[in-house]
Image 1 (cartoon, rainbow, N blue to C red):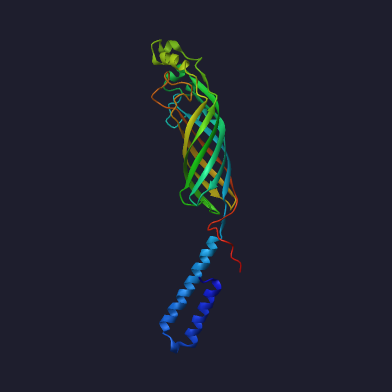
Image 2 (cartoon, rainbow, N blue to C red; image 1 turned 180 degrees about the vertical axis):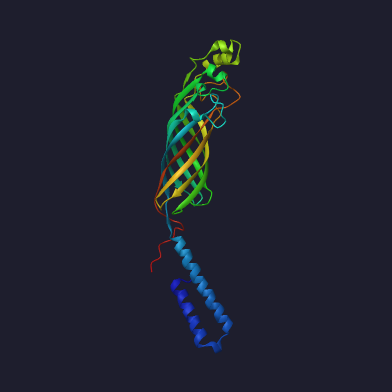
Length: 277
């Protein structure tokens, strides 16, 4: 197999044959050989340059933002933006390729929901349920970089993700301000509350984070990020209520965060030794 020196030597020889001995060889063949060898050299140089490109193996991130409760105690399909709670997010990820990465995620903050935050419909002020809970979440996530820019030195890098994890909670539900006379003893609110009282709020929930995000890399190391993550779950007692509120509507939560990322480690894309000249 030719190395760079052999290719240059061959090209030089062909050029000499073309210039010095045109009468002994077909001129067109000589020209084609020279062009072919030059192309091989250029492709080879480009291949080796790409093979020796150093890129980061790992990425770490720190972000802050908000947790939004979505469930029985809010009429909004987008969640209770009137009862926002703070969120902190930490993660470490390993790049598998320019398009895929595996990520370990750790988030903590709080969740809150309250009927009293909404004047309409009127019954919410009379029911007046509320809840609050700290939250600690650990998850494993797979990321797909849509444009294949995990190794990009600069610029935008959008991605989507999905995974699984657990959330640890300490839910405190409160129905002390319920106006029982407004609903009547036979209402679903009163009869359902008796059922809910017999069930303790969950302390651990299985969650499936799914979402989208974008990073903007300022250099090989540093970048900024923005992300939205929605948690799918199958439990209707995130807020401590179900039968007395809306048993047909499940509970969820999501988050919006912005932060910084830092990439470390070097990896030779082709696992080739460095070529020395």
